[in-house]
Length: 244
Image 1 (cartoon, helix red, strand yellow):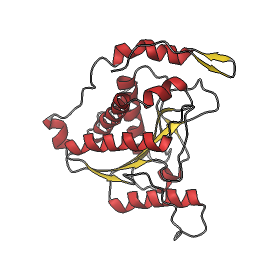
Image 2: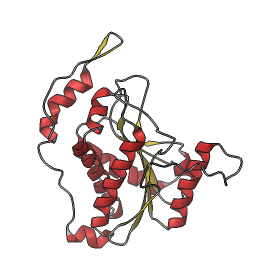
Image 3: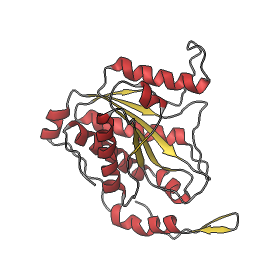
């Protein structure tokens, strides 16, 4: 359980209040209980046997984004991905992981591509060869200004089912993590373009925001993030896409 405290961070002489204070004051509202996890027989019977690819973004020599306190995106992504796998596996979903450790996929056997492109090609190949029905790529966001915050999903505009998946996950981000004005958006991401199944790019928060980075550094909060994605996947597979 978090301790309640008021935090004011000074960045180059400027005070950053808003989100950090709101987060700390609001923690007691939505962190008092463990998240309610759907494991009932009706859900399990509808979803058992499904196959999902979970892609923990970055890894190895590619750390991804980094918070001011030194928190690495690659580590946060992997932790949430493994938690998500744990929950989905409990209801009979087979999870294919693009990575389960701190590694990258800069495959020299793929010619005429940058190291990063080779990594993304490999991840898409794993997904396409798996026969999975859904592709989930877990990332954390970053922006030069520290004011931006909130988890958000992205999808390929040419894949209608991807839109449904993104909307389902976004709904449960708001439900599980608290108020969030962000909405699912279309995006031009190579792993979403190159994978053949419905998929979503899942940005679980901004490491560039000190308050949100502090939350993402807490295992309890990361568990809530994983549960939100889990519930979104269930809603997608059971065709219970909520409106918001």
